[in-house]
Image (cartoon, rainbow, N blue to C red; front, top):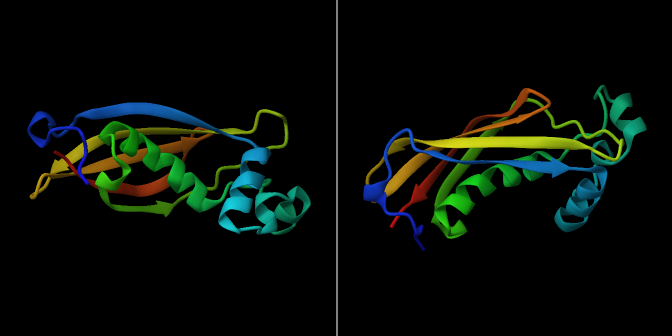
Length: 142
């Protein structure tokens, strides 16, 4: 599959629409059920603090999945993403305060590649800290 965006209409530096994603403890429990990752650092505050974390943290793969939504929404077809990788730099801390945390994601086209593909660089932050580093996706455009 390819994206609904034409390769010829995209320039290096094109900014994708930024998005924010709320994360609550309820979100983490639902993700744990869907993924099968029931590590207590994602739901048990006492355990998370005992192992040196500031509080319960979001699953890394959940954070990664939320971030790529900026790209898939822009491309119009999730299958247009042909490569995606990140480095986890800081955890998304999710307090049990009824509000939780927010993941803020922005992205821009960093390079035009061959075969109708572009590289998109993403920036994901939470509480003012970068939570994903080297976050890049390769997308095949129309």
